[in-house]
Image 1 (tube, rainbow, N blue to C red):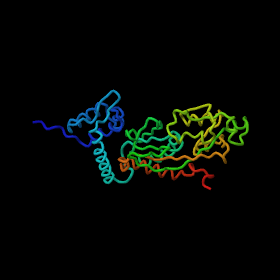
Image 2: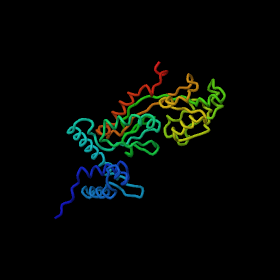
Image 3: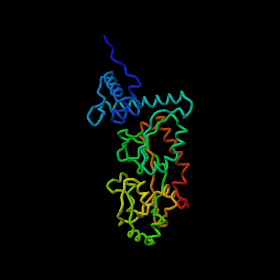
Image 4: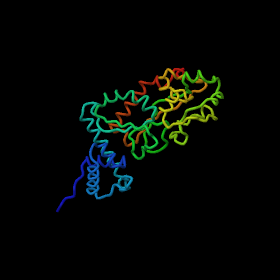
Amino acid sequence: MNNPPQFTWDDLQFFLAVARTGQLSTAARQLRTSHATVSRRIDRLEFALKVKLFERNPRGYVMTAMGARFVETAEKMEQETERLRADLTDGATTQRGVVRLSAPEGFSNFFFARVLPQFVARHPHLSLELVTIQQIMSLSRKEADITVVLDEPKGGPYFSEKLTDYHLQVYGSRDYLQRNAPITCRDDLLEHPFISYIEEMIFAPGLDYLGDVHPRIKPQFQSSSIFAQLTATRNGLGLCVLPYFFASRYPELERVLPEEVDLRRHYWLTCHRDLRQSPRVRAVIDFLREAVIGEDVRFIPPWARR
């Protein structure tokens, strides 16, 4: 009589990768293996457990009700395994695995990219995936392990903490401001072209700030990319609301009505509560927290410290 195949911890890792991504190809890339191997491991796990964990469809793998229940158990086993591995190894540099971080474009390109060498030096065995298209990422579907967001999540099984406040002001290039009518009050802003986000593509309420500057401002140039907005502003296309922590790096940009217009927003760090104690996730959270504290002067301008 043949005994049914026994599943291993490796099988559970394959299961979690597919559960979090919903795609064999993405799971295979994270696990550094082949599409066929992932499929075979999932089939073996389902056969060993005698349950169907996923529904297969053209768009990917969708967890069944039993799969959703089983993922909680598998994640607890993952946490205990990683905790044990950490206890058996020497120090934080032994953290291993892949962590996917989703963060806004401005935070990613103008802050995190600058401190990335420090992260790599501290955690050489961690592989980091940085996603800046936040509209498509979902913590609830485990599409990202950690997110940096502008608005604190309300409800749900999430851990969140405020990373930092940051300030935004209206900026224009020195050349533009010299060539155009002076700006002495908020109503004068209506005589100038504005650069901003595409309204229907604003994915977070925290980015919808033109109304806070003046309720009648209508942008002339719109882009979903803050980098494109910055470039357009530096090239003299008009005025733009930009975060101080990166606009202040460009000497050709000048603040407009600095005493009247000063907006404050927040960056929140969030992750699924089940992942908070995962050593690989905790390593990234701790690093982000320390890095932001170390760069506090960049986020909080001098006038906001008075």
